[in-house]
Length: 306
Image 1 (spheres, rainbow, N blue to C red):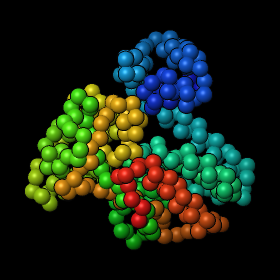
Image 2: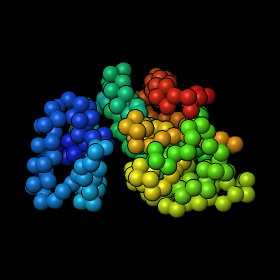
Image 3: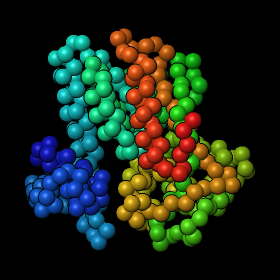
């Protein structure tokens, strides 16, 4: 087992299709297939379930996926730390982003920060908004892009964009293509993330305001697991578009705008009150503003810059 195989394995699951993964990795489909099979042969288990729509991890594959993501992240972190140690003048900025933001513009953020501010060593931390806010409070992060950040005295917040949440279902479950009322959406068998998650709280708060019950059939910690439940027709969900762009593109999930009322979340650029020594804050935050413009374009009609 080597790092290349783990990288290929993770990218294949993210793409949900060996052909698409090979295109993103810029290698031949045959070569990618051989690497995956070699990994399966070495471990003596099937890692991928192959079907007409593509591939998905088996139970053993889910276990390897968790470890592979952690290993690759640690290798990347080690690389950043070693490079930063070799250049004492570089300024380390620990920057938190949510999974949907990382999926849509994470690569742009890393590349442009490196090109435009070579004096900055940007260390990316990917997690849910409530976890990033906790890390900010504990001073583990300098900056974060988080949703619905509370107005706490130790934070400096800047609102960036507002995003509508969408009702997600499998194509077989879809009834109509237009908007769906909030009341109708929350009566379906929903799969939502943990009770601390922004989307969960928004849905529950809005339902409480209207005096309506929410049918949470599955409370799942993993967004990937939620999307798998939805794609298989086991559950529906309320999600941001950024969390399911690949599944929408492949036709595994269909989206409908939730309205009457709309459920929206607000993205903030958040930092601790104290500044980072030597960092050109205006230049850095202007760079972030440009990345958020691209995020707005990527989300499309369901997003509005503030």
